[in-house]
Image (cartoon, rainbow, N blue to C red; front, top):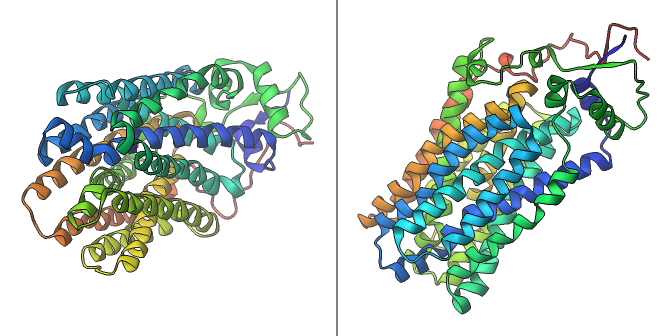
Length: 452
């Protein structure tokens, strides 16, 4: 009986309509996720005024969702490897859609923070699941580009927030942008019907008929018979998808460094997501102009993710990631010293490309590092532990804003995290990565036979 190693087969496949379907859903989930996460930053000046709160309290409110994001990334990402990704994606969509909309009904900081915490569970859970899903089904030659393209959806969501906030907040109040976030719950039946299960999940569950259907769609010209048996990679044989496996096979120190890199990257992202609008307003720009900077920031992030993904498929992704962290630190230091408006837009573009764009690359890198069977778990824990930086960021920057320090010092404090992130990535042992292949190592599609 022939044994087909499904992940090698997927890696050698040509991009087709099945990949387009997976890409569509993963990209759409991140667009919605990005909207839900960025909505507070765009509405924060109006919320502060409406609720009569200071910058420190606003920072705590903005950070409340991030506690939920941390727990959601860790637990829902891990549960996806146990119970299936489509189901957990639906759970996440329900949480972030309904409770972000509910936040628009609140009128005090405590109720707002509670609803945002629950929404954060869903926001955090989506990130590792879609990273693992896109990474598993992507052809090897396109994997990093496709995963980073998916994460560009996060920035598209941020742009949608800025565009809708400019139109809605002035006319209907800050609550309106939160109400709009409830609509994605209508997508759940379509996700259940069309989103494929992970091949690792189907192999471990013994659902070979479903696997044959997936393989036929993934590689239409590959002849599959009922006599063939599907297997995962050697790392997939264990049914254990626990956090212990992240520290086995020499991955322990590198896992820790990935967590540090995520903490610093997410610190930069959430410091800017929560406070860029307010910091630009402090620099003398109107709300509309400040939101334009948010748009430029997210456009830069999309460009950085796409360019970084393309470059990473050509060059070693680890080197690209280190370079992006360093550029982010330098660009953030420059932003406070740039006086020309035109030059400031350029610098903010670079900041978006090298902070949020860097974090999108980090997700792709983490997804590439871990074996398929624990990929959601690995990315989920990296994203979850990394939220420590995300939680600290809005509170710390809120405290710095309350001290009324010079504007450039606020940006330099954010940029320092980029240097720490670059050092952490440098220390990761790339030979422990699942994607690492010695130059002489062949890729076998079929085990136990001479092939077809």
